[in-house]
Length: 118
Image (cartoon, rainbow, N blue to C red):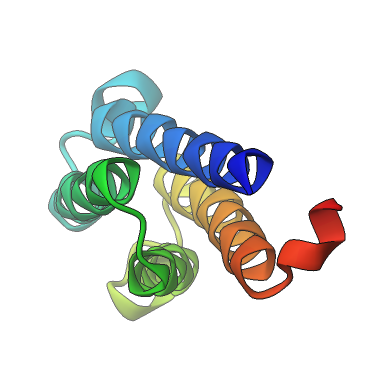
């Protein structure tokens, strides 16, 4: 059981690092002057970071599902918010979204299939 909890901690740390990357991406990648993608990155980064910190302090499956929703939002947001033409912003959101979805799905899978670690 301890090994299972370590895996969740790793996935939550991954999501925390991804949240930080997302938050600083407008400055690093160079789309800070574009309002929609920049604000989306900042707000989504804060939400993702808060969820990761909550999961690190006391794991709950619903936090992973919310992380999954944030990841899916990141993937579709360039088209829904109208910044798909901005290659840097769109690529950043889609790539980080896919990584968040993968880490969150992995955490949910681990939670629902604890026997897989035996």
